[in-house]
Image (cartoon, rainbow, N blue to C red; front, top):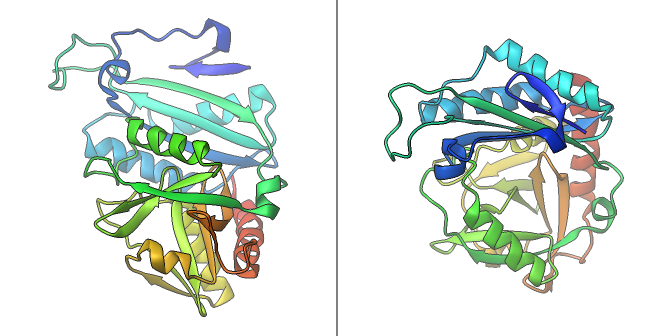
Length: 281
């Protein structure tokens, strides 16, 4: 497989990044993951917009003009012949002497790779996944898509050890989000999900699901909710670029609803894929 280091497409085995890069020393960088179906990037413009916003929040310049960046990522996907999967890319502040403060000048670095993997027809799409709750141990700027992911990896490991597919993080008695996803529930005739703030990442797939709900005339309510409320929901599901729309069938060992992927979740997933492909790059 080819990866992208700066502007160069090279074999992954030949990829080299300096250990003095601030991404390695301080996790000083921003990343994005975009889903690929039928060789198209889903929700691409929303990902580009979020990348620019996150970089702006930490005063991190893009390493190249946005149009060139888009072209480089598209070229990486084409060079590897990926038709369904994910592309990951990150921008770091680059190489500098190790000092906590930002360097006076920086040379931002781009790194990207792509993977072919099933997104549409996966067992979990039909069977759903289990989830467990964990304390939210992250920093206070979760709206920034930082490459500093140690609390999320710890949460995901707890889920793995419990035989679950996702960890749902809880702070002050309320669900914030999943370790790598946005959490939603269906209660009655509406979708309920947490409102945006510095406490959660502005999920790209979350925003697109709102479009789907508008198309299907499903009411959306943005507010905090507790694990107990989630456990009593008709349906519980997550959204992310990696999982698209994924049903959660149990929480902390107790079934959600009938213990299977619910009809609204399945409808939202199918309609999301349909609409996303209509506007995909």
